[in-house]
Length: 270
Image: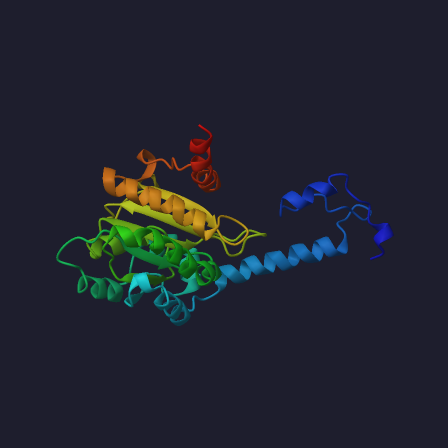
């Protein structure tokens, strides 16, 4: 299409601040061809993310390189036996299948562990493949000095958030952390969410969970997500609760680093 036929939008300058589809211009009463093709490509990417199968072997290999996690990863499956079934029946994605329950029953520790980590494909396996290992690497750097005890990592195919409650309960964990692929958007097919629950057990509702969302390159960084998550985990362990009663009161990470750097200078000036 000839550029001269595209009528520009006066908000064009605002596009540098957002990935949202604004100020696309128009040709007659329609979108420009490039904008329309970009939309179709983004829509196809979101659909592909929803239907993509999680590469469990590659994820296990990536997690094995995060030394603080140890080497034990368990591959599990929800009660949804196929992707189509998973999308049609959300309830089946919240419970483990019989074989997975049997596997975890034999692994439960005699004493409760501090944390069970559950990684579920959710609605974007792409998000998990890209972000789960790097996020956990950042988190483990914060947890390592504090000697948290960990259950084996559970990788769940066709899983939803609440499946972490059953995994945590079966592994006798005081707390469960679920990493899950979030519902793709047209500008974010690889967004990962983090859900934290104290005293996990089957039947809990969302009010008992804390959520950190939009972990991805163009969203919340691994470092900042780990920073917020470490605070919530520490507070949950100390106060023995999570969800609506536990608020994220962390200062902005950049402000905290700035204050730490400026404090010696302020003392010198005084």
